[in-house]
Length: 266
Image 1 (cartoon, rainbow, N blue to C red):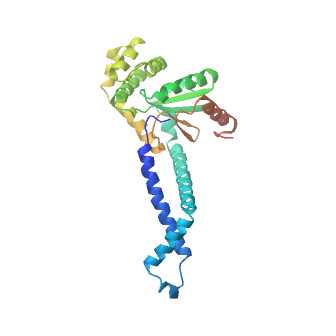
Image 2: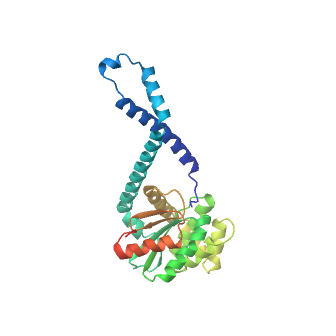
């Protein structure tokens, strides 16, 4: 569901886990089977390795169990780190002066979306956001420009920042036009989307020559790095980071839970 693939990273991580699990299993077994000092004198390194090897061959599930436990611990640690990152970054995450706000700015639940104009999944997820907004008058939506798919995405995000600076009331129209267009999003297509809704290219250019767009995008990159985001779309609801285009039903459920019990899962 991500615009960026982590397949190579996962493969490398899986290999490292296998080696680590095997080593841990061997060490644990060696400890369990550790002979008394007297017996140890009669066992050389080769003998111990043979015992460990034969045990692992006869009981390969030990390696699987070690991998599963390692995976569980890594996921728990990553989730705890994200929770801490959300807490530490709450102000810039939910209330940055540089962010885009749609829906009800005073809503009782906030949905933050990190997106890229060249992300196919973001295009598909756009309908989910619109539907949620139309059905929920008390939902605040925060959009974060997170261009991760190349130079064209960065250029489109820069123009989007200029649009939000010049005419924030027209940002929603611009966002829809650019996100749902066919073809590559870049500076040219973003400027066309902006001028098509009546904005002046000269006004936008005046913002583009400043560092506002760069600072806005850098703010989001830094935030995404702290949250451990690897692709788009990604969401934050309450204290939960949601990776990928999970769909209307899941987002709706998490928003309802936040309203009912203050957490994304009641």
